[in-house]
Length: 197
Image (cartoon, rainbow, N blue to C red; front, side):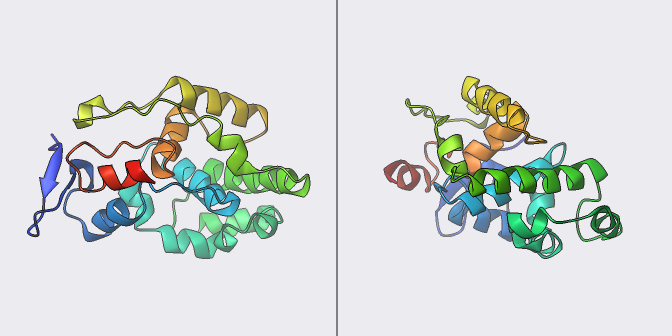
């Protein structure tokens, strides 16, 4: 069972889910929960959260650079042009998660956001409307939900717009990662900082 908080040698307490892996600690300390309002960065996050589905985030994090290389740096206009032969090529690349449905959904999602951007619409505006007005405060890992009403509504709207691999759990993970909610535990050295942003 994970400890709620872990304290390092410098006395910094952080959310116990990141354990002692240096990459995970860096992600926790520098990225997780920091508000993201850039359409292209949010697109990458949606894609990577989709690949995480059924896996742990560290599995994706360790492969993130390979994902960026394989998926045209998540440039939606380039990625939207991927063909079935690109799918087959990606299915043979051991550096990423070789799941055909996830690969195909990432390409489909690129086409969906490209259509949005071409119409002058904003992915950030679409997603951030679901950020809850009331900020929840969590003190223990077992208080952190996997799904919320907001993530369920976000999932419903995204699916209706043609997005794939955007279930309520994936949407909530996206909300956590991009600062729409602050799920750093009280006592974590990042909690107050993220709350002040």
